[in-house]
Image (cartoon, rainbow, N blue to C red; front, side, top):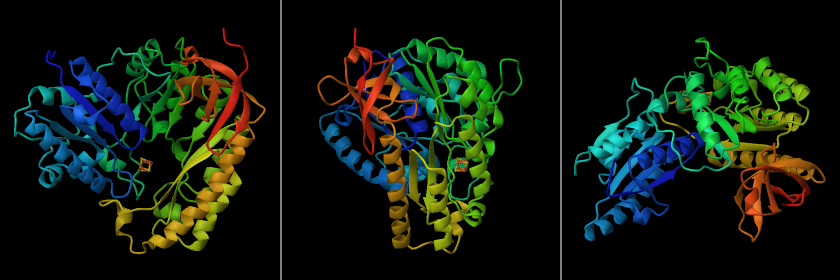
Length: 449
Ligand code: SF4
């Protein structure tokens, strides 16, 4: 355990998986006596937990490192040392190259080695660089401390990492490795720990979460549905969600939980990426548009009120106007409460990067604009339709305005109400008075006591 407390600043980029990893790093380093700060300027150790999904992700990290170089220099003039760590998926993809291009970096640590950070910190020697982008034998989840500090009402819990699907546009199978599921026993212990620290809603995370197949309590592989059923037995845990799912792994058992297990929230994030079968094939998605629509029909039959969310890529190499029209048609037919849409961008090392018919940037931008106008309209309609309804809201933070608290409906809409901060961490009924494009406003139904 350290005695002279060093300050750590962690900046997290990208997906919820990274946010989760950053919380775990903060917990495990906190356990070793390091102190987390919200100010980069105050930090003795700066950790960038990077994401490789977005376009030019690595370049953005290099510019951030340029700013950190100046900061490190200023601190050094005052006799203060600064350790700079690049962690996460850019670290995995770039490795040693990061130190070559940004010599101020002291450590490059891939997502599977984050649990080794406390050990690397203890062994720091000025001028000695650490690069660890292995996929180690030991399980990082076993080694990350479970922590004790009070948490927000809603938390993420990584149940599965990596992916064997090899969609041709995606770096995940290369940066996070093959599919790996944690054991049910390990996850239940961690979920119970979260609930004991104030968490009321757990969002199970995985790059391919519904492919979960971890060792169950009986020693056999359990499905995600079985894990969810077991986790739902935890007293004090009120809500369960999971993300991100793949259409091919949406089993009847899992769909059935939307009707059969009240703790599973009526919200499903299910990427379809493109409405064109030709493009889906080129993406190696292993499903067709019809297959996706059939799954949605089953989900809607089981839970008519469900809120659907998705990921869509426009301008994948070879995408014609007709292919794009098929995507719009899919959106019109299914209708989504939210969606994440992106222009295709080349990820070096992925098969799609080598396809000759790349789409010009201006066409991609036009298509994205058209698609987003449709998606925004659907989101606004979904929120508008909530007006006049009474919805249970899990409050998780205070708002910017005086006496304002914020929470989430079962459909993952943000709600602002006037209420006491004492309600944070619990579920209360709210009458929705206004449904805006991005959030709802409402009044608490029960008077506060
Ligand atoms: S299923 Fe998801 S994580 Fe796996 S390769 Fe495809 S896009 Fe990437």
